[in-house]
Image 1 (cartoon, rainbow, N blue to C red):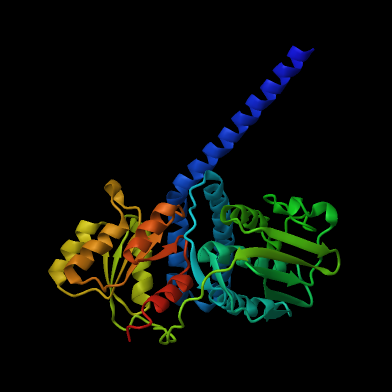
Image 2: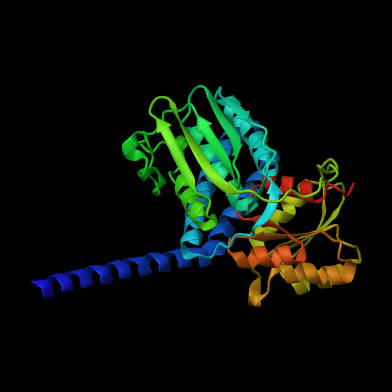
Length: 384
Protein backbone atom coordinates (compact mmCIF):
# COMPACT_ATOMS: atom_id res chain seq x y z
CA UNK A 1 0.00 0.00 0.00
CA UNK A 2 2.81 2.40 0.92
CA UNK A 3 4.64 1.64 -2.35
CA UNK A 4 1.45 2.28 -4.32
CA UNK A 5 0.93 5.64 -2.60
CA UNK A 6 4.54 6.63 -3.25
CA UNK A 7 4.22 5.63 -6.91
CA UNK A 8 0.99 7.65 -7.25
CA UNK A 9 2.62 10.67 -5.61
CA UNK A 10 5.67 10.42 -7.87
CA UNK A 11 3.45 10.16 -10.95
CA UNK A 12 1.49 13.23 -9.86
CA UNK A 13 4.70 15.22 -9.31
CA UNK A 14 6.05 14.20 -12.71
CA UNK A 15 2.76 15.19 -14.37
CA UNK A 16 2.81 18.56 -12.59
CA UNK A 17 6.43 19.18 -13.59
CA UNK A 18 5.63 18.28 -17.19
CA UNK A 19 2.64 20.64 -17.22
CA UNK A 20 4.75 23.47 -15.73
CA UNK A 21 7.49 22.91 -18.32
CA UNK A 22 4.91 22.98 -21.12
CA UNK A 23 3.44 26.23 -19.79
CA UNK A 24 6.91 27.79 -19.50
CA UNK A 25 7.81 26.64 -23.03
CA UNK A 26 4.60 28.21 -24.36
CA UNK A 27 5.33 31.46 -22.53
CA UNK A 28 8.91 31.57 -23.82
CA UNK A 29 7.71 30.94 -27.37
CA UNK A 30 5.18 33.78 -27.18
CA UNK A 31 7.78 36.06 -25.62
CA UNK A 32 10.26 35.31 -28.40
CA UNK A 33 7.63 35.61 -31.13
CA UNK A 34 6.12 38.85 -29.83
CA UNK A 35 8.00 41.00 -32.37
CA UNK A 36 6.62 39.03 -35.33
CA UNK A 37 3.12 38.95 -33.84
CA UNK A 38 3.01 42.72 -33.32
CA UNK A 39 4.37 43.77 -36.72
CA UNK A 40 1.23 43.12 -38.86
CA UNK A 41 -1.00 44.85 -36.32
CA UNK A 42 1.39 47.80 -36.20
CA UNK A 43 1.09 48.30 -39.98
CA UNK A 44 -2.74 48.11 -39.76
CA UNK A 45 -2.87 50.80 -37.07
CA UNK A 46 -0.61 53.12 -39.05
CA UNK A 47 -2.47 52.73 -42.34
CA UNK A 48 -5.86 53.16 -40.66
CA UNK A 49 -4.81 56.64 -39.59
CA UNK A 50 -3.34 57.41 -43.03
CA UNK A 51 -6.64 56.40 -44.69
CA UNK A 52 -8.90 58.70 -42.64
CA UNK A 53 -8.52 61.92 -44.69
CA UNK A 54 -9.00 59.97 -47.95
CA UNK A 55 -12.29 58.25 -47.01
CA UNK A 56 -15.58 59.90 -47.96
CA UNK A 57 -17.89 61.05 -45.14
CA UNK A 58 -20.13 58.03 -45.64
CA UNK A 59 -17.21 55.70 -44.97
CA UNK A 60 -15.98 57.36 -41.79
CA UNK A 61 -18.36 55.46 -39.52
CA UNK A 62 -17.29 51.99 -40.80
CA UNK A 63 -13.67 53.19 -40.50
CA UNK A 64 -14.36 54.11 -36.88
CA UNK A 65 -15.73 50.61 -36.22
CA UNK A 66 -12.62 49.13 -37.84
CA UNK A 67 -10.49 51.23 -35.48
CA UNK A 68 -12.41 49.95 -32.47
CA UNK A 69 -11.93 46.38 -33.65
CA UNK A 70 -8.19 46.92 -34.07
CA UNK A 71 -7.99 48.51 -30.62
CA UNK A 72 -9.67 45.45 -29.12
CA UNK A 73 -7.28 43.16 -30.99
CA UNK A 74 -4.30 45.23 -29.78
CA UNK A 75 -5.53 45.07 -26.18
CA UNK A 76 -5.96 41.30 -26.37
CA UNK A 77 -2.53 40.79 -27.96
CA UNK A 78 -0.88 43.14 -25.45
CA UNK A 79 -2.48 41.34 -22.53
CA UNK A 80 -1.58 37.84 -23.71
CA UNK A 81 1.99 38.82 -24.59
CA UNK A 82 2.46 40.70 -21.31
CA UNK A 83 1.39 37.61 -19.38
CA UNK A 84 3.67 35.39 -21.46
CA UNK A 85 6.63 37.70 -20.85
CA UNK A 86 5.99 37.79 -17.12
CA UNK A 87 5.57 34.02 -16.92
CA UNK A 88 8.71 33.43 -18.98
CA UNK A 89 10.74 35.63 -16.62
CA UNK A 90 12.06 37.93 -19.37
CA UNK A 91 10.76 41.18 -17.85
CA UNK A 92 13.41 42.84 -15.66
CA UNK A 93 12.35 45.91 -13.64
CA UNK A 94 14.35 49.14 -13.95
CA UNK A 95 14.12 50.57 -10.44
CA UNK A 96 14.66 54.22 -9.59
CA UNK A 97 13.28 56.96 -7.35
CA UNK A 98 10.62 59.25 -8.82
CA UNK A 99 7.71 61.42 -7.64
CA UNK A 100 4.53 59.38 -7.64
CA UNK A 101 2.75 62.44 -9.07
CA UNK A 102 4.69 61.82 -12.31
CA UNK A 103 2.69 58.60 -12.55
CA UNK A 104 -0.67 59.51 -10.99
CA UNK A 105 -1.26 62.89 -12.66
CA UNK A 106 -0.93 61.64 -16.28
CA UNK A 107 -3.19 58.69 -15.48
CA UNK A 108 -5.78 61.06 -14.06
CA UNK A 109 -5.56 63.28 -17.14
CA UNK A 110 -5.83 60.30 -19.50
CA UNK A 111 -8.85 58.68 -17.84
CA UNK A 112 -10.84 61.77 -16.79
CA UNK A 113 -12.53 62.08 -20.23
CA UNK A 114 -13.45 58.37 -20.19
CA UNK A 115 -14.97 58.72 -16.73
CA UNK A 116 -16.87 61.85 -17.73
CA UNK A 117 -18.26 60.07 -20.80
CA UNK A 118 -19.85 57.52 -18.45
CA UNK A 119 -21.15 60.23 -16.13
CA UNK A 120 -18.60 59.32 -13.43
CA UNK A 121 -16.48 61.56 -11.25
CA UNK A 122 -12.75 60.80 -11.23
CA UNK A 123 -11.11 62.09 -8.07
CA UNK A 124 -7.32 62.34 -7.91
CA UNK A 125 -5.90 63.06 -4.47
CA UNK A 126 -2.72 65.12 -4.24
CA UNK A 127 0.22 62.69 -4.06
CA UNK A 128 3.59 64.27 -3.20
CA UNK A 129 5.69 61.29 -2.05
CA UNK A 130 8.70 59.84 -3.89
CA UNK A 131 8.61 56.09 -4.52
CA UNK A 132 11.24 53.44 -5.30
CA UNK A 133 9.96 51.33 -8.18
CA UNK A 134 9.88 50.72 -11.92
CA UNK A 135 7.81 53.64 -13.19
CA UNK A 136 6.61 51.85 -16.35
CA UNK A 137 5.51 48.65 -14.61
CA UNK A 138 3.98 50.47 -11.63
CA UNK A 139 2.11 52.73 -14.04
CA UNK A 140 0.75 49.62 -15.77
CA UNK A 141 -0.52 48.30 -12.43
CA UNK A 142 -2.35 51.53 -11.58
CA UNK A 143 -3.73 51.93 -15.11
CA UNK A 144 -5.10 48.39 -15.06
CA UNK A 145 -6.83 49.06 -11.74
CA UNK A 146 -8.35 52.31 -13.03
CA UNK A 147 -9.55 50.60 -16.23
CA UNK A 148 -11.05 47.81 -14.16
CA UNK A 149 -12.90 50.37 -12.02
CA UNK A 150 -14.22 52.16 -15.11
CA UNK A 151 -15.59 48.93 -16.56
CA UNK A 152 -17.47 47.90 -13.42
CA UNK A 153 -18.77 51.30 -12.25
CA UNK A 154 -21.98 52.65 -13.78
CA UNK A 155 -22.69 55.50 -11.33
CA UNK A 156 -20.84 57.49 -8.71
CA UNK A 157 -17.09 57.94 -8.70
CA UNK A 158 -13.62 56.48 -9.02
CA UNK A 159 -10.87 57.77 -6.75
CA UNK A 160 -7.07 57.50 -6.75
CA UNK A 161 -5.54 58.23 -3.35
CA UNK A 162 -2.15 57.89 -1.66
CA UNK A 163 -1.47 57.11 2.00
CA UNK A 164 2.07 57.34 3.35
CA UNK A 165 3.40 55.12 6.15
CA UNK A 166 6.87 54.92 7.70
CA UNK A 167 8.49 53.08 4.78
CA UNK A 168 5.80 52.66 2.11
CA UNK A 169 3.23 54.52 0.06
CA UNK A 170 -0.14 52.84 -0.34
CA UNK A 171 -1.71 53.74 -3.69
CA UNK A 172 -5.46 53.09 -3.65
CA UNK A 173 -7.93 52.90 -6.53
CA UNK A 174 -11.51 52.89 -5.24
CA UNK A 175 -14.87 52.83 -6.98
CA UNK A 176 -18.60 52.77 -6.33
CA UNK A 177 -19.15 49.90 -8.73
CA UNK A 178 -20.88 46.53 -8.50
CA UNK A 179 -18.44 45.15 -5.93
CA UNK A 180 -17.02 41.65 -5.72
CA UNK A 181 -18.72 38.75 -3.93
CA UNK A 182 -16.46 37.16 -1.26
CA UNK A 183 -16.29 33.86 -3.15
CA UNK A 184 -14.78 35.67 -6.18
CA UNK A 185 -12.02 37.57 -4.35
CA UNK A 186 -9.36 34.95 -5.09
CA UNK A 187 -10.59 34.11 -8.58
CA UNK A 188 -10.48 37.69 -9.91
CA UNK A 189 -6.68 37.40 -10.30
CA UNK A 190 -7.02 34.51 -12.78
CA UNK A 191 -6.88 35.04 -16.56
CA UNK A 192 -10.25 35.70 -18.23
CA UNK A 193 -12.18 35.58 -14.94
CA UNK A 194 -14.80 38.32 -14.80
CA UNK A 195 -17.46 39.14 -12.24
CA UNK A 196 -20.99 39.57 -13.59
CA UNK A 197 -20.10 39.12 -17.27
CA UNK A 198 -21.20 35.62 -18.32
CA UNK A 199 -21.98 36.79 -21.86
CA UNK A 200 -18.36 38.04 -22.28
CA UNK A 201 -19.39 41.61 -23.12
CA UNK A 202 -16.21 43.14 -24.60
CA UNK A 203 -17.06 46.49 -23.03
CA UNK A 204 -16.19 44.83 -19.72
CA UNK A 205 -12.69 44.09 -20.95
CA UNK A 206 -10.99 40.76 -21.54
CA UNK A 207 -10.36 39.55 -18.00
CA UNK A 208 -6.58 39.94 -18.22
CA UNK A 209 -5.98 43.23 -16.38
CA UNK A 210 -6.01 41.95 -12.81
CA UNK A 211 -3.95 38.86 -13.65
CA UNK A 212 -1.27 41.20 -15.02
CA UNK A 213 -1.51 43.30 -11.83
CA UNK A 214 -0.95 40.20 -9.68
CA UNK A 215 2.09 39.12 -11.73
CA UNK A 216 3.61 42.61 -11.63
CA UNK A 217 2.95 42.73 -7.89
CA UNK A 218 5.01 39.58 -7.44
CA UNK A 219 7.75 40.78 -9.81
CA UNK A 220 8.15 44.16 -8.08
CA UNK A 221 7.43 42.85 -4.56
CA UNK A 222 4.62 45.41 -4.25
CA UNK A 223 1.81 43.66 -2.32
CA UNK A 224 -1.63 44.24 -3.83
CA UNK A 225 -4.83 43.86 -1.82
CA UNK A 226 -8.55 44.30 -2.34
CA UNK A 227 -11.51 44.91 -0.11
CA UNK A 228 -15.00 44.97 -1.55
CA UNK A 229 -18.68 45.06 -0.69
CA UNK A 230 -21.17 43.83 -3.31
CA UNK A 231 -23.42 46.66 -4.43
CA UNK A 232 -21.23 49.28 -2.73
CA UNK A 233 -17.83 49.18 -4.44
CA UNK A 234 -14.22 48.05 -4.23
CA UNK A 235 -10.83 49.42 -3.17
CA UNK A 236 -7.61 47.98 -4.60
CA UNK A 237 -4.30 48.99 -3.01
CA UNK A 238 -0.61 48.68 -3.94
CA UNK A 239 2.17 48.96 -1.32
CA UNK A 240 5.21 50.70 -2.83
CA UNK A 241 8.53 51.42 -1.03
CA UNK A 242 9.29 55.09 -0.45
CA UNK A 243 12.30 56.60 -2.26
CA UNK A 244 14.51 59.65 -1.91
CA UNK A 245 13.23 62.91 -3.37
CA UNK A 246 15.32 64.47 -6.16
CA UNK A 247 15.98 68.24 -6.44
CA UNK A 248 13.20 70.21 -8.13
CA UNK A 249 13.62 70.80 -11.87
CA UNK A 250 12.51 73.66 -14.08
CA UNK A 251 9.18 73.13 -15.88
CA UNK A 252 9.39 71.62 -19.35
CA UNK A 253 8.84 73.69 -22.47
CA UNK A 254 5.48 73.37 -24.26
CA UNK A 255 5.43 70.34 -26.56
CA UNK A 256 5.92 70.49 -30.32
CA UNK A 257 2.72 69.54 -32.13
CA UNK A 258 3.84 69.08 -35.77
CA UNK A 259 6.87 68.13 -37.81
CA UNK A 260 7.28 71.67 -39.19
CA UNK A 261 9.62 70.40 -41.92
CA UNK A 262 11.90 68.51 -39.53
CA UNK A 263 13.96 65.70 -41.05
CA UNK A 264 13.14 62.22 -39.72
CA UNK A 265 15.15 59.08 -40.48
CA UNK A 266 13.04 55.91 -40.21
CA UNK A 267 14.64 52.44 -40.15
CA UNK A 268 12.56 49.24 -40.19
CA UNK A 269 13.15 45.99 -42.07
CA UNK A 270 9.41 45.33 -42.43
CA UNK A 271 8.47 47.06 -45.70
CA UNK A 272 4.79 47.45 -44.80
CA UNK A 273 5.49 48.96 -41.37
CA UNK A 274 8.12 51.26 -42.90
CA UNK A 275 5.63 52.42 -45.52
CA UNK A 276 3.04 53.12 -42.83
CA UNK A 277 5.56 55.02 -40.68
CA UNK A 278 6.65 57.10 -43.67
CA UNK A 279 3.09 58.05 -44.58
CA UNK A 280 2.31 58.94 -40.95
CA UNK A 281 5.39 61.14 -40.52
CA UNK A 282 4.80 62.91 -43.83
CA UNK A 283 1.22 63.55 -42.77
CA UNK A 284 2.59 65.27 -39.65
CA UNK A 285 4.76 67.55 -41.75
CA UNK A 286 8.14 65.80 -41.56
CA UNK A 287 10.67 65.36 -44.35
CA UNK A 288 11.32 61.60 -44.35
CA UNK A 289 14.20 59.30 -45.22
CA UNK A 290 12.98 55.70 -45.02
CA UNK A 291 15.44 52.79 -45.01
CA UNK A 292 15.22 49.05 -44.51
CA UNK A 293 18.65 48.76 -42.85
CA UNK A 294 21.34 50.74 -41.08
CA UNK A 295 23.67 50.68 -44.09
CA UNK A 296 20.93 51.86 -46.42
CA UNK A 297 20.06 54.75 -44.09
CA UNK A 298 23.72 55.86 -43.85
CA UNK A 299 24.21 55.67 -47.62
CA UNK A 300 21.14 57.78 -48.32
CA UNK A 301 22.11 60.29 -45.65
CA UNK A 302 25.52 60.74 -47.25
CA UNK A 303 23.85 61.36 -50.60
CA UNK A 304 21.53 64.02 -49.21
CA UNK A 305 23.88 65.59 -46.67
CA UNK A 306 21.14 66.90 -44.38
CA UNK A 307 21.46 66.41 -40.61
CA UNK A 308 18.52 64.43 -39.11
CA UNK A 309 16.31 66.02 -36.47
CA UNK A 310 15.22 62.60 -35.15
CA UNK A 311 15.92 58.91 -35.81
CA UNK A 312 13.24 56.24 -35.33
CA UNK A 313 14.46 52.65 -35.67
CA UNK A 314 12.96 49.23 -35.11
CA UNK A 315 15.02 47.34 -32.54
CA UNK A 316 15.19 43.92 -34.18
CA UNK A 317 16.64 44.29 -37.69
CA UNK A 318 17.85 41.63 -40.11
CA UNK A 319 21.17 39.77 -39.94
CA UNK A 320 21.29 40.04 -36.16
CA UNK A 321 21.55 43.84 -36.15
CA UNK A 322 19.54 46.20 -33.99
CA UNK A 323 18.09 49.70 -34.06
CA UNK A 324 20.37 51.05 -31.35
CA UNK A 325 23.32 50.47 -33.69
CA UNK A 326 21.55 52.44 -36.43
CA UNK A 327 21.01 55.41 -34.13
CA UNK A 328 24.57 55.30 -32.78
CA UNK A 329 26.11 55.22 -36.26
CA UNK A 330 24.02 58.19 -37.38
CA UNK A 331 25.07 60.02 -34.23
CA UNK A 332 28.75 59.30 -34.98
CA UNK A 333 28.34 61.29 -38.17
CA UNK A 334 25.92 64.04 -37.15
CA UNK A 335 26.39 64.47 -33.39
CA UNK A 336 25.35 62.78 -30.18
CA UNK A 337 22.46 65.18 -29.59
CA UNK A 338 20.28 63.77 -32.40
CA UNK A 339 17.20 62.34 -30.60
CA UNK A 340 16.78 58.58 -31.00
CA UNK A 341 13.61 56.47 -30.68
CA UNK A 342 13.61 52.67 -30.58
CA UNK A 343 10.41 50.94 -31.72
CA UNK A 344 10.08 47.37 -30.52
CA UNK A 345 7.61 44.53 -30.34
CA UNK A 346 9.60 43.00 -27.47
CA UNK A 347 9.18 43.75 -23.78
CA UNK A 348 12.18 41.91 -22.40
CA UNK A 349 14.96 43.57 -20.44
CA UNK A 350 17.47 43.50 -23.33
CA UNK A 351 15.77 46.26 -25.30
CA UNK A 352 15.11 48.47 -22.30
CA UNK A 353 18.64 48.22 -20.90
CA UNK A 354 20.25 48.73 -24.31
CA UNK A 355 18.16 51.82 -25.03
CA UNK A 356 18.50 53.35 -21.56
CA UNK A 357 22.27 52.87 -21.64
CA UNK A 358 22.48 55.12 -24.69
CA UNK A 359 19.75 57.56 -23.69
CA UNK A 360 17.23 56.45 -26.34
CA UNK A 361 13.45 56.64 -26.01
CA UNK A 362 11.64 53.25 -26.17
CA UNK A 363 8.15 52.83 -27.65
CA UNK A 364 6.51 49.40 -27.63
CA UNK A 365 4.56 48.10 -30.60
CA UNK A 366 1.81 48.05 -31.54
CA UNK A 367 1.57 51.83 -31.03
CA UNK A 368 -1.20 54.02 -32.41
CA UNK A 369 -0.27 57.16 -34.38
CA UNK A 370 -1.70 59.26 -31.53
CA UNK A 371 0.54 57.55 -28.97
CA UNK A 372 3.57 57.86 -31.26
CA UNK A 373 2.82 61.53 -31.88
CA UNK A 374 2.54 62.25 -28.15
CA UNK A 375 5.88 60.54 -27.52
CA UNK A 376 7.54 62.61 -30.25
CA UNK A 377 6.05 65.79 -28.81
CA UNK A 378 7.58 65.00 -25.41
CA UNK A 379 10.93 64.09 -26.95
CA UNK A 380 11.14 67.20 -29.15
CA UNK A 381 9.59 69.62 -26.65
CA UNK A 382 12.82 71.61 -26.30
CA UNK A 383 13.46 71.83 -30.06
CA UNK A 384 11.34 74.77 -31.15
